[in-house]
Amino acid sequence: MIKLIWKKDNKWKKLLPIFVKHPDLVYLDNAASTQKPKTVIDWVSDFLKNDYANIHRWLYSLSEKSEELYYESKCALAKLINCKPSEIIYSYNSTYCINLLAQALVNTWKLWKWDKVLLWNREHHSNILPWQTLSKTFWFKIDFIKEDKNYNIDRKDFDKKFDKKVKVVSLSHVSNVTWQIMEVEKVREKIWENVFFMVDWSQSVPHFPVDIEQIQCDALVMTWHKMMAQTWLGMLYLKRGWIKELNPLILWWWTVKDVSVDDFLLQNNADKWEAWTPNIVWAVSLLKALEFIEQLWWIGKVWEHEKNLIKIMCKWFEKREDKVRLIWNYESNNRIWTFSFIINNENNFNKIWEIFSKKNICIRTWWHCAYPLHKSLDIWWSARVSTYLYNTKEDIEKFFEILDEIIS
Ligand SMILES: Cc1ncc(COP(=O)(O)O)c(C=O)c1O
Image (cartoon, rainbow, N blue to C red):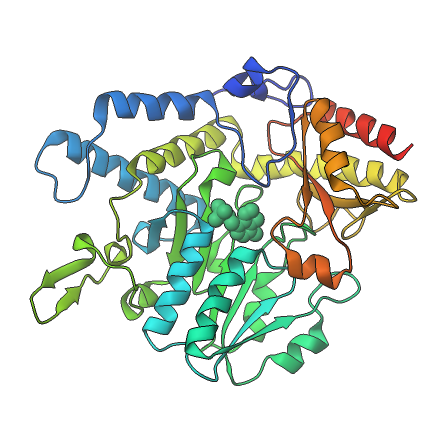
């Protein structure tokens, strides 16, 4: 096991080729996607060179090996989030998983005319558009819960909108703009048993330990490029009963047990949902990414490290309170280490990222796929700085150096 202590000497970056090639790079756009460790890249490359074959119904050892690794990655994931490997469905990303789920709900008559889906204003478009587009054809309604002045769920608004027509509640665990950790367990307590509860984990799993048993939701989605694996691997977790009960709209030869000219018979397990040649290579990359994190630190320790840096960030932002406004507050509790902000009297967001970019600092500006939230706050854009476990205090210092130049 490799032992690294960040405070003394951060060697993380040496384990990621991009930082070796560009030692001055300050990468602060991790909420969009994370960089990949050498072990992940090498392993994917070795796998493709030596062991790759298509999976399912294997009749030769190469295929058997690939199948084993595919399953192993589901086992590693199940251990991380506390569920059974058989409850994990791999797909392309969070967006695709939400679309898959929403389509299955209408396809199985769980969501229909006059029903209601309850979302929150601050949701990423990925958790808005799949519902909106289906609602046009299937005539169900969508209501958005407002936030209160502290950016929490407005409880009165929730109570008003949560009525008997609500069949689905779908929320993100951590907002990709305010970065608050939402107490999804409390929402579960408030909603009735027969309401389908979906949680978008895209911004929470990479940062702190999560436990499906605690959340008690029916479905969860996650996209693994935000946790050092490759792009194009998403996860849809479905509670066991739902895997059987819901019927996906997209089918393929492995999703069925039998086909005749008259009809078809669907599988009863997660295979029913994976209607494509599986993302075997990317599943292998996830297996390695999880191993990498586990070997170095374990996700609980990542969270400890992150919490320390959140405190520093909050204080530094607070010092500039008169010039820079954080979206959400300066408290270090209940948030992850990512910050969205606006600069007073500055409306040219292109200028902002260009200045950072010239100094080799990658940040993001604009609406972060959350138009409704920005509109409700009456702002046109925000800048976002997001870190991951390989970022150092020096990275943050460089960022604030440039920010200070801009605001002065
Ligand atoms: C909260 C949230 N949900 C969903 C997504 C969509 O992820 P993907 O583009 O990988 O599907 C993102 C991506 O930024 C996100 O932050």
